Each structure stands twice: as C-alpha cells, then as structure tokens.
Length: 188
Picture 1 (cartoon, rainbow, N blue to C red):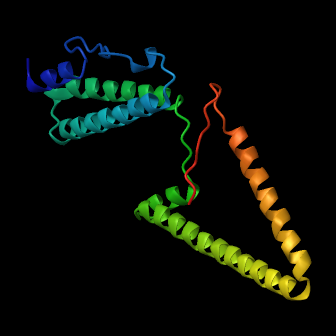
Picture 2: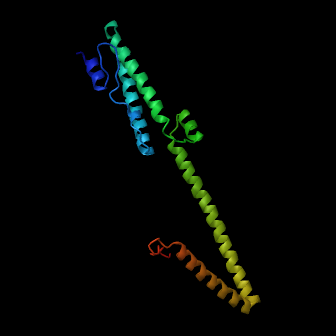
Picture 3: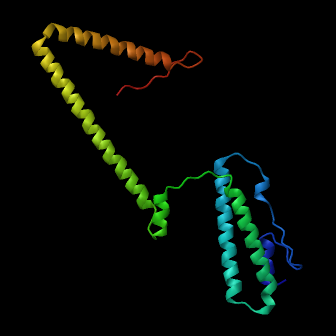
C-alpha cells in the first residue's frame, strides 16, 4: 500500500476500486444541541481544509500513476462538502453584514466587536448623564418645594417613603419561590 492509500484509509475512504465509503456519517446522529451541531460543522470545516491540503499535495506532484488517489481525494472532498452543507442546515448562526464586509476587506472582525462595545459604552455614558441630570433636577425641585411649601414637602416625602416600602414588599412577594422561600437581593 502506498502512502497516499494509507492517508485515504485513515480518512475512512477505501481505496483500490475507486469506491469511497465515508467512515461515519455525522448527519445520521440526530441531536438537538446547537453547540454540538456547531462543533460538528467546525470539525467538518477542519476535515475539509485537511482534504484540500492533501489535494494540493497530490496536484502539485501529479503524475499519471497518482490519478486514482487524486480522484479519490476529489470524491472525498465532494462528500465532505456535502456533509458540511447538511450539518450547516441544522445551525442557525447569524453573522452581521458588517463582519462579513470586514472579512472581505481583509480586516480583522474583532475590530467590529471592539466598535460595538465602544458604541455601547458611549451610549451607556450618555444614558448615565441623562439619569444624573434627572436626579439633579429632582433634587433641585425638592429643594424648591421645601422652600415654597414646607408642609406639603414633608407629606410628599411621607407618601413617597410609604409607596417605596409597598413597592419593595410587592417585589419580594413576586420573587417568592414555589416552596415558600424568598429570593433576597443584596441592597447596594
């Protein structure tokens, strides 16, 4: 057996008569785990890359005596590509168009992730600024209310405190577990 047939046998392909038998058909195992499906697609991609490399080696040193192993490698590549298509149909992966454009331009797609995170940070800072502005406005209005209507301001604070206690009680009642225990969140 020549070295090309050893390689073919290790890939699960029988040689000799040109018939190709896949070692195992991953698509026959029906699994609902998306992570497992993704791992199967990744493994298929890696196997396809290996087959392409072996095909490149056969083509680069081609002579008529190696025609059968070359045809076998081409057939195994076709089978693996078909297997990859079947496996990929089970995966629902959505890739943003911007990432594909970056890859097409030869850039690192991690830049897209970095830009998205920086955008989120900027929006978070804007929202925090707005929240701080409303807190300052509330504090200012309460000071003005204290000066203009001291009695009403005190009754407002009492009503506000009572409603806060009631809201906390309702939140705790909603967070009770079926066995009667209560989920407790640490106050900050």
